[in-house]
Length: 123
Image (cartoon, rainbow, N blue to C red; front, side, top):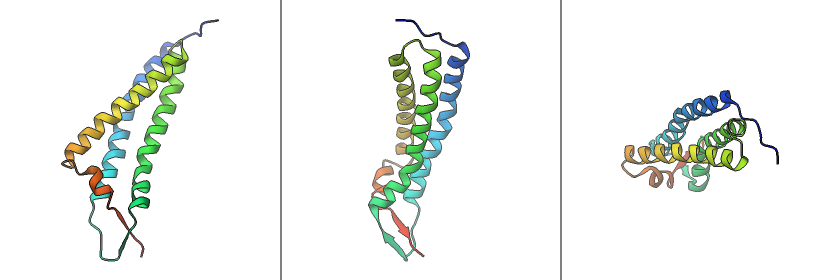
Protein backbone atom coordinates (compact mmCIF):
# COMPACT_ATOMS: atom_id res chain seq x y z
CA UNK A 1 0.00 0.00 0.00
CA UNK A 2 1.42 3.36 -1.03
CA UNK A 3 1.79 6.02 1.59
CA UNK A 4 0.04 9.29 1.06
CA UNK A 5 2.17 12.41 0.91
CA UNK A 6 1.53 14.87 3.69
CA UNK A 7 1.60 18.64 3.48
CA UNK A 8 3.06 21.09 5.98
CA UNK A 9 0.62 23.86 5.02
CA UNK A 10 -2.31 21.59 5.74
CA UNK A 11 -1.06 20.94 9.26
CA UNK A 12 -0.77 24.67 9.92
CA UNK A 13 -4.17 25.20 8.29
CA UNK A 14 -5.69 22.50 10.49
CA UNK A 15 -4.64 24.28 13.68
CA UNK A 16 -5.64 27.69 12.33
CA UNK A 17 -9.08 26.32 11.40
CA UNK A 18 -9.38 24.70 14.82
CA UNK A 19 -8.57 28.02 16.47
CA UNK A 20 -11.11 29.80 14.24
CA UNK A 21 -13.70 27.24 15.31
CA UNK A 22 -13.56 28.37 18.93
CA UNK A 23 -15.42 31.66 18.32
CA UNK A 24 -17.87 29.82 16.05
CA UNK A 25 -18.71 27.36 18.83
CA UNK A 26 -18.91 30.19 21.37
CA UNK A 27 -21.40 31.98 19.12
CA UNK A 28 -23.47 28.83 18.52
CA UNK A 29 -23.75 27.75 22.17
CA UNK A 30 -24.24 31.25 23.54
CA UNK A 31 -26.84 32.06 20.87
CA UNK A 32 -28.66 28.91 21.94
CA UNK A 33 -28.55 30.03 25.56
CA UNK A 34 -29.49 33.63 24.85
CA UNK A 35 -32.47 32.84 22.68
CA UNK A 36 -33.70 30.04 24.90
CA UNK A 37 -33.68 32.26 28.00
CA UNK A 38 -35.07 35.46 26.43
CA UNK A 39 -38.46 36.62 27.73
CA UNK A 40 -41.57 35.83 25.70
CA UNK A 41 -44.64 38.00 25.23
CA UNK A 42 -48.23 37.11 26.06
CA UNK A 43 -49.01 36.24 22.43
CA UNK A 44 -46.53 33.37 22.29
CA UNK A 45 -47.54 29.83 21.54
CA UNK A 46 -45.50 27.15 23.27
CA UNK A 47 -43.91 24.72 20.80
CA UNK A 48 -41.05 23.12 22.76
CA UNK A 49 -39.95 20.53 20.19
CA UNK A 50 -39.86 22.96 17.28
CA UNK A 51 -38.21 25.57 19.47
CA UNK A 52 -35.40 23.27 20.49
CA UNK A 53 -34.81 22.17 16.89
CA UNK A 54 -34.63 25.74 15.60
CA UNK A 55 -32.36 26.83 18.44
CA UNK A 56 -30.06 23.89 17.73
CA UNK A 57 -29.50 24.73 14.05
CA UNK A 58 -26.45 27.00 14.61
CA UNK A 59 -24.90 24.30 16.80
CA UNK A 60 -25.46 21.62 14.16
CA UNK A 61 -24.13 23.87 11.39
CA UNK A 62 -21.05 24.84 13.43
CA UNK A 63 -20.25 21.17 14.11
CA UNK A 64 -20.81 20.12 10.50
CA UNK A 65 -18.67 22.92 9.09
CA UNK A 66 -15.98 22.32 11.69
CA UNK A 67 -15.72 18.59 11.07
CA UNK A 68 -15.80 19.06 7.29
CA UNK A 69 -13.10 21.74 7.21
CA UNK A 70 -10.87 19.97 9.73
CA UNK A 71 -11.29 16.60 8.06
CA UNK A 72 -10.39 18.06 4.67
CA UNK A 73 -7.23 19.62 6.12
CA UNK A 74 -6.39 16.59 8.26
CA UNK A 75 -6.60 14.27 5.25
CA UNK A 76 -3.90 16.39 3.62
CA UNK A 77 -1.77 16.70 6.75
CA UNK A 78 -1.87 13.08 8.00
CA UNK A 79 -0.78 9.94 6.25
CA UNK A 80 -3.67 7.78 7.48
CA UNK A 81 -7.40 8.29 7.00
CA UNK A 82 -8.16 6.94 10.46
CA UNK A 83 -5.76 9.45 12.01
CA UNK A 84 -7.33 12.29 10.05
CA UNK A 85 -10.86 11.32 11.11
CA UNK A 86 -9.79 10.97 14.73
CA UNK A 87 -7.97 14.33 14.70
CA UNK A 88 -10.87 16.24 13.19
CA UNK A 89 -13.51 14.60 15.40
CA UNK A 90 -11.49 14.94 18.60
CA UNK A 91 -10.72 18.58 17.92
CA UNK A 92 -14.36 19.54 17.27
CA UNK A 93 -15.54 17.52 20.28
CA UNK A 94 -12.95 19.07 22.61
CA UNK A 95 -13.84 22.62 21.58
CA UNK A 96 -17.57 21.98 21.72
CA UNK A 97 -17.55 20.31 25.13
CA UNK A 98 -15.32 23.03 26.58
CA UNK A 99 -17.57 25.83 25.29
CA UNK A 100 -20.69 23.90 26.36
CA UNK A 101 -19.37 23.63 29.91
CA UNK A 102 -18.61 27.35 29.98
CA UNK A 103 -22.11 28.12 28.63
CA UNK A 104 -23.68 25.85 31.27
CA UNK A 105 -21.70 27.68 33.95
CA UNK A 106 -22.68 31.07 32.47
CA UNK A 107 -26.39 30.21 32.60
CA UNK A 108 -26.04 28.62 36.05
CA UNK A 109 -26.86 25.12 34.79
CA UNK A 110 -30.13 26.20 33.14
CA UNK A 111 -28.98 26.12 29.51
CA UNK A 112 -31.00 23.06 28.55
CA UNK A 113 -33.78 23.58 31.08
CA UNK A 114 -34.66 26.89 29.48
CA UNK A 115 -34.49 25.43 25.97
CA UNK A 116 -37.04 22.75 26.85
CA UNK A 117 -39.70 25.39 27.43
CA UNK A 118 -38.99 27.61 24.44
CA UNK A 119 -41.96 29.26 22.80
CA UNK A 120 -42.29 31.02 19.48
CA UNK A 121 -44.32 34.15 18.88
CA UNK A 122 -46.63 33.82 15.91
CA UNK A 123 -47.70 37.39 15.12
